[in-house]
Length: 172
Image (cartoon, rainbow, N blue to C red; front, side, top):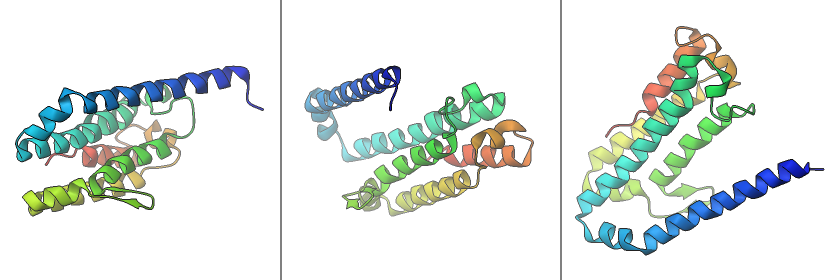
């Protein structure tokens, strides 16, 4: 049995997701799509690469891991009200990799990696290697994440989180 307050929360969260997706649909249906498709291919590729790099760097590395490690505070960790930060961090990175590789479960599509390979195969390989290294470093962090951050950056587990942070700062 789910509590009424929990149901209300879930309903509101679902509404927000739908609202945010509608904003994306509206933007892509409007002038942004025309601008994006009309611009030079290299500019479009740079914007796409910058987008995944920014997600990995600012959101994942800094906001989700580094701040929590620096402050050693549960309130600063991703999913601070659950014991899932380790899972959420891994899945955030998996989402970035999915976009790059054009995969989601059994669904495969034209990937950003393939498009980049056509323009610059060395850059595509570099990005693939950086993402693989980031996944390896993130997977090496302790579960639960509270344990990983509890001793700070100078602890053995904290050093692993710091390595995960550094490897998630993906710069092409």
